Amino acid sequence: MGKADPERVIILGAVSNFAMQWKGTSAYESLMSEGGDEYSSVEAAVRNVHAVGSAVLRGPLNERTP
Image 1 (cartoon, one colour):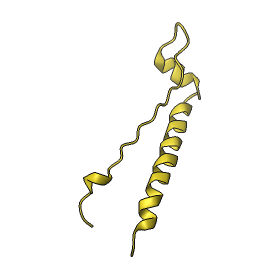
Image 2 (cartoon, helix red, strand yellow; image 1 turned 60 degrees about the vertical axis):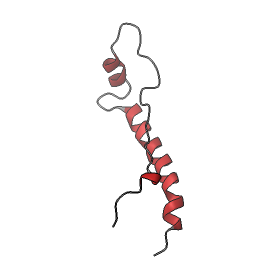
Image 3 (cartoon, one colour; image 1 turned 60 degrees about the horizontal axis):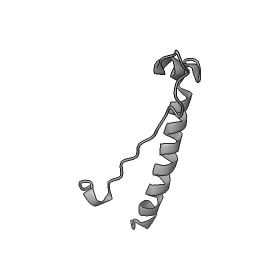
């Protein structure tokens, strides 16, 4: 395997807390209230980045010749 091609680099980002916290609560309290002990909005953001990244990579991976 060779080095990464800088012409084919993609950086994906995601937003995980789509709304502002309730008045009188911290950002942490707002995030924790979404799913108890789990960060439900982070989970959605990771799923979205995976979906986009997978779709972007399918093209070049399907074009590769063995």
